[in-house]
Image 1 (cartoon, rainbow, N blue to C red):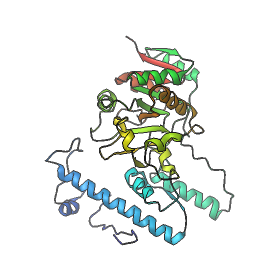
Image 2 (image 1 turned 45 degrees about the vertical axis):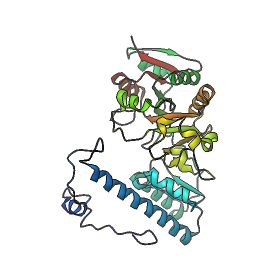
Image 3 (image 1 turned 180 degrees about the horizontal axis):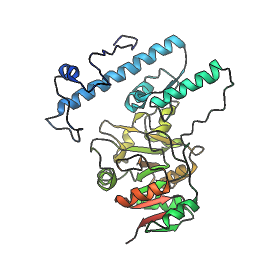
Image 4 (image 1 turned 30 degrees about the vertical axis):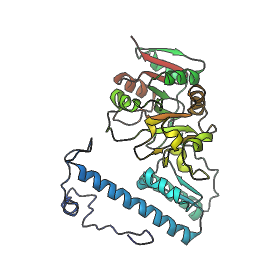
Length: 345
């Protein structure tokens, strides 16, 4: 790695389109594992060490490239795309460096993110079309009204009722310890659940992470769960750069929980003291914001554990998807549109 962050990938070692990994195995002194690591043990500690080393190198590249870009361009704002831009830990370290006034990563920042940038480049710079008003809402997928939702619920075998104040009712269930499948409005884009296709729980309960994995997620115990927090109160709970970078809106930055607050939300603070937060704004997602507000009224904590509404499959999209996943898991309640549903007793 150069001082300016530039680096070279040796194609003789990194053969991304080839199953022959012998060169990398020789470099790392370890064979490729036959199965993913579900728990770190003395037998696979070397794999965890390699992963940490690669992460630390990635963070250094981010910071050095960031400084070089700022010096070269003089720009105060940074926009990133591509799969590596989903590295929330590296994004957080870059934000803390204060190199840029703001860092923006659009929520679907995989290879598609690069394609979007190319399309904008051609539209504006090559074809000369004027810039269009920018929407940064991640809620661009399909939505379903109460009539369509009830048509699915009526044939599901679930007990359900329509609730006038669904945010208030849901907040009470969460405060009482329930795990909620929350299905509202237009589906979010990208790999993060951002409050419209989410599994929610009370972050004050340390046991909730084990319950979430037991009842639905079935994933590695070392993977952290993430918090959604009222945007206007986020800085009270997390150490955020000022102004708060936009990566915080999309669960794309890991930030330190404040020491006087971390003990109150143990289910969403990782072992290193950080959390991959979603700052929820009223103007972007009024219903999810209202739910967090109701939670704050009941518990004094404007935070919810938020995970994707799925079980080892793509995030649910339609009411039928939601009911199917709910039925095969041990989630306590499905809150979908204005309806609260549970399994028939």
